[in-house]
Image (tube, protein in one colour):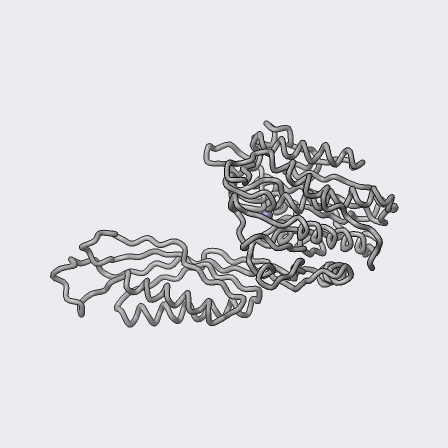
Length: 414
Ligand SMILES: [Zn+2]
């Protein structure tokens, strides 16, 4: 499958640094909130580059941008690659941007080599991946994949009440193409890992085999408020003590399902939250993640049993409400194999890895054969201005992306 094609790592790095000037922050990060004036500037810079590379540009109703390089058989479904240009308010220079500009670098490299692919290639910029300005995240790819309908997507408001539809019109990106509903041959997304595993294992490339499933809960523990002085220890129904034991149980459930499980309590409210009153009520959230649905279900059972047992032993009531469920998303076997083959063929140290975060690829996996390429990021940190990645790792990830795309575009599934 290996070709003599090579990407230009310096050109990729220069483009990343040029894009990073738009919305640059003092600490070396980026702030390009979705559909802001800075997002428009970033989109226009990308479109200019893509046009120089001979691509034709299409924009759909959700403002997703598609830069298309024709194939020898242009009627074949395109191989899509890309990610997002929007960032968190204190975001970094690589999250999302790397996937978009790696896709552009693939096109530029194919042009340099005069290499035609059988199927067309499209580099896509998805709208509002971060969900920071307009919740929920991954809305552009979500509408494309039919997870949300178009009206829902366009109506999402920011904190000031401005909607995605209004802001798309304001910045000139309310496109006229239908969002989704067309065949896609395959989807490949390159991304920084946003976790510490590749760095710790000294691997250059992560072959992403899928994304974790998630179960989120809201738990309310009810006891009885009473005066902290006159109430003897034996007569208390302290909701906070019960909640503390349950939180400890959540943490233990995570450790008991190592190495892939994650279990987090990130939000808690104590009522009445007064220093000389025994707490009568505690509300807290639980976030469980694991790549295997069966394990997530097992974690669910232990959580419910532990909460009921702890409540009963402490004279408390507990309500465990499942708030959100997102099933594990295995990526396409052949696309994953194309990524693994490309990494092995080029001799890059690589390993299989599961994505801990959500990505546009997770929604695209519902409508197209999908895979992702991860590269390490410094200390596993992202969604932070100090987010950093090494030029040689980004070049390696882009090179793998090129080989995987060419393999797929030249052996399209008809
Ligand atoms: Zn991202």
